[in-house]
Amino acid sequence: MHTRSLILAPVLACLLAIPGATRADAQQRPNRPGPPGGRAADDRPADKDAGVEPVENVSTTQHTTTINGKTVAYTANAGTMVLRDEDGKPNASVFYISYTADNQQTAARPVTFFFNGGPGSASIWLDMGIMSPKVPHMGPGGSQPAPPYDLADNPNSPLDVTDLVQVDAMMTGYSRPGVGVKPSEFTGATNDIKMFAQFIRRYLDKYDRWASPKYLFGESYGTFRSAGLASELQEAGIELNGIMLLGTVLDFQYLSASPTNDIGYAAFLPTYTATAWYHKKLPAALQAQTLEQVVQQSRAYAFGDYLTALARGNTLTPAERGAVAQKLSQLTGVSPQFIESTNLRIDAGHYRTELLRDQRLMLGRYDTRLTALNGNPANQRQDFDPSSVAPSSAFMTAFMRYLHNDLKYTNDLEYYTGGHTGRWDYSDLGRGYPSEVESLRLAMAKNPYLRVMVGAGYYDTATPFANAEYTFTHLGFDQTYRDRVSFKYYESGHMAYLNQDSAKQLKADIAGFITSTEHLGRSLTNAPTSAGR
Image (cartoon, rainbow, N blue to C red; front, side, top):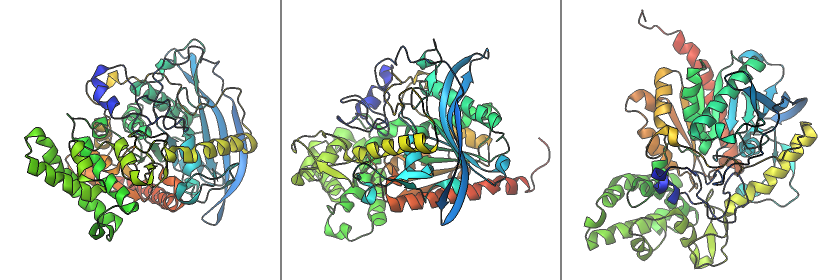
């Protein structure tokens, strides 16, 4: 993740993208700092000649798909929405794809706006991964399939329970500023949120969806955007029924481990334990337990004795350091000597090259179940991220086939998957680590019906699940916040939907969340309340 502010140097140091990655949504350029999910804006200025004449050009087509054994007829709209400045002058066009089920009471049917992260990533990954009625076939467990890639009905699309709207951030997909308009007017944490809020309001107007229960689904930096967007939409008189998050980062402190920020090291530890369990690197007594059991032990140690030991810094005695190293070795599968050499602070990148070094293998960043040969097995850096490579070509090929052949949409522009937004500005969020935790807390405080679902992959070292847990235990200290947040865990990585079993579970969780929250507001509204205002 990039910023112009020197105050974020600790954040940048811990979010380095992996060289050689092919997934533009994921890692962008070699040796450049990456975001929460490694999905970074490029640190160069955005393209100076990026502006195009804002035009609303939408292709409308009718289709059918099969979900849960039932035929679902739907209308797809693929195209651009024109945005306007405060004077009413067109200043941008935003690319979107909407999927609307036919033969429904559309005006009151749930609608979910979904988007990926980056910052600076298109939303092709959520679209082709779980949302779209058509998806590519992946290899077993989400591994890389063989080209030329098949496109098939998606049995896990949530289209049977909610209409869906993919939105591409500015300078991603086909979204572009108008002629003479700087991309920076739409990029950066605050501008990006304002752009998405404006798009959603325009969409509700254009397609008469004001009466619909409204949801956001964000992945990676899209979770950060969702938290801020909830508050921004409230300012426009738009309340949400629910927010779904996958690969969560709301506060960058918890991902930004450094010698002066120990929380990040604790937040990664349970993911290391899950990873070692999967690769059968734990001691026999732990290996014999379930994944959930070993994770719980690691979680308890991470935010208990481990965090306490880290807080003591160099006041630990040699014997105490040795005891911590031994315990960490048991929970991570790497040697006590390696751990001591890290000062008890295990870097995620180093862990991915260390665990299976004896096999010359490195682990995936997004999904540590996936492995590949490292060019130099003595290196602490990875040649590439095997979990990033896995979906890249398959998703892009499938998306373009579906867009051109089925949705009948073409555009002379290049579809940007990422890397064109320029430097991302966080200065409006104040000093310190970028955070939208307070924005989400305020949105939930103002809207007592707002619920949040947090999806987390056990094998995600881009946005580890314990980071999300720590975030939400500190979201607010009244019981209402805890009661309105539910966690869902997947035996998968950052992109949980790549694993077929996890995709099925994720779909069920989405459907259950929407069904429960869609009717919640009506039931609570009818409950007795105190009189007066």
